[in-house]
Length: 301
Ligand SMILES: Cc1cc2nc3c(=O)[nH]c(=O)nc-3n(C[C@H](O)[C@H](O)[C@H](O)COP(=O)(O)OP(=O)(O)OC[C@H]3O[C@@H](n4cnc5c(N)ncnc54)[C@H](O)[C@@H]3O)c2cc1C
Image (tube, rainbow, N blue to C red):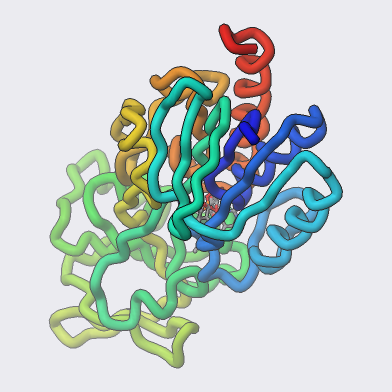
């Protein structure tokens, strides 16, 4: 069988796309390797109607609801290769299986490359965080830190004080200009240039960071913007254009989530500078609408 749309990635973006196409009674194959970016967090916040739910519970509900639609096939596994052919696209899976689809939606997400600091990785998603909107509220206005990996940390440093008194740890990656210092001061942000060398406390909670000169600074949450890499190389294999995002390369898409390769759409963190489940789901909806329209109006529609 040739599917109308093969969706690679079955988390917020992929499931949202699948749901729209299912409701148009289109034949959809949804394949998911089941490693969503937020799997390290105990709860997910800010997703309307699901605030505070464990990430896996939100996805499980979506999987259950999607299963009610007979035109959707869900496959647990990994898509390892994809190329264009006369049917549209041929996708190969890690178990050797191959499937064809007329359109392709890449909802494959990104991977975070965390800084190598003792005590940091085990706290990721609990007390070491990427986004104050997602997890800042639960830190109860306690002292917080921002760990810089460059000048872009200014953005987080100016934002985070709404969630608690903030220290910016520059980690030797940049020195604020007088204007930046004034902006930090106006938000009461303390600036610490001595590098953080270790995270302290009964993990995954955080009590303090230890600096290279032996001092420790008490904080309950540490925000950072890790470098990101694509979780899958399918977009690269297909020849999709990329652009520079704030933390790593992003698949380039237009307003309908179409990539530079005809018939290939991308949605979610793989194609968005904002790591947010609601925005990923919204982009998934748009990719579904875009791919559906192209099935109707395209040459092979
Ligand atoms: C620690 C942490 C906590 C977060 N907390 C929140 C929060 O509270 N609220 C919020 O709004 N946002 C939160 N986010 C951001 C949120 O996780 C992302 O914005 C969201 O997960 C993006 O959804 P996505 O569908 O694009 O990608 P993902 O959720 O990362 O899902 C991509 C899926 O594609 C699959 N996949 C990848 N490649 C392949 C392949 N080749 N074959 C098959 N499957 C593949 C992966 O296994 C995965 O299941 C958090 C992020 C992190 C890192």
